Length: 231
Image (cartoon, rainbow, N blue to C red):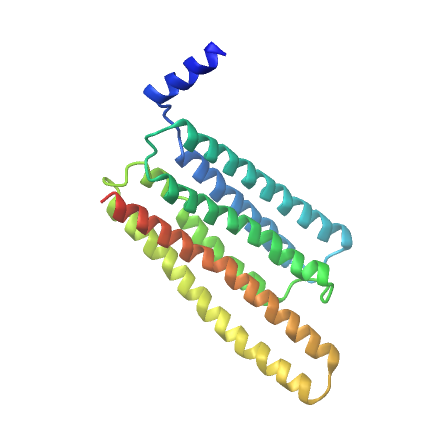
């Protein structure tokens, strides 16, 4: 009992130094790994049931690792009074990164569990390739943010590159949105129910992939808020 009290007092007067940039890098690596797995599956015209299950199992495994990192970060915030940025902003950052891992899993499940295609729509690969480039740029952020004042220019340049990827993704989204909606309308007019269903499902997965790409915007906005606070 006395040792517990001493331990709490010790943490109060001598707060622990906790690394948050390492876990941030780990989360970005999980996202990158998930994108690679997803793209590999998308490269195949059709997937066996075993391949579908393996993809979902691997994405779920990454999702669980992301959850474990969140728990570590939450514990770290409790052990230190001197985080490099505000606890609220750090939570926002890690929740954003965790959401990206979750969205990879959710979008893949939408296609596989609905069982309306033997593989993935072609636009998924196109969106994922752009997202992979955005995440590749984001990988530099943890090291740069460890000394944000010294690296302000490099961080700004990295965010600009990430923003360019998101802008490119928007163009892809609206091009395919227009094509899909035209196909849905044509199928409805001709009473082609299977084509109509496929079009509706394609629109759903396109929108879900856009939500994944929007996590780049969330990352950019969170980092910008962190920099403004610590300018």
